[in-house]
Length: 265
Image 1 (cartoon, rainbow, N blue to C red):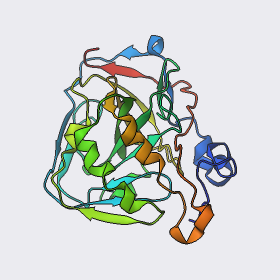
Image 2 (cartoon, rainbow, N blue to C red):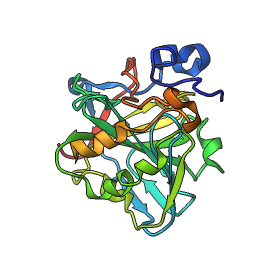
Image 3 (cartoon, rainbow, N blue to C red):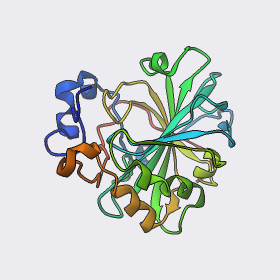
């Protein structure tokens, strides 16, 4: 992909993506506004279950549009809920945020934005042989979405935030071996909304079963401000390496897709 072929500026932002990525104009696009009056109570499903590896080396990468933690192929599983009998494995997790507190989440709830959104991206190991293969299939990916609001410092997430100064520019990458538990990024209440959607970044492939937790998780204003200091260009770009103040895609129409909820309030 060419440098800066897409991003979040006026020149290459979400409004322009459909020109280069035809799937971005599909009818199963994400994110969406969760209109709670339209949500259907789901029939009983097995509980959503997850298990993650804690002690293994992870990579923190700046791909030019966010920070991302790569799990490097270690053992994990997500199953249950609307995932049928398939088992999904955690590939990576990353974050979206806004230039100001109170904006930055990709999904909104009754029109309300939150200050950020974590995405834990899993792929279907029951049906597919690789993340790349799964990413092109309608049931290939399952993403846990966590809404972020400003409040107290998030201790587990801080292990990543403290390393952001070392991945300031596009292409920067560091490995860290400190134990980290992705399960601690999730809210204590596990009620969630689910619907069929897409990746929220190009190529916007319509391959995601979304599971968005209802309960937001708190992060501190300082943690968010450190995220906004990341650059969307390479160090050699000089002035071109602009700060990544916001990196969220606006919501798209739900259309005739069914939005369901599971678990308590």
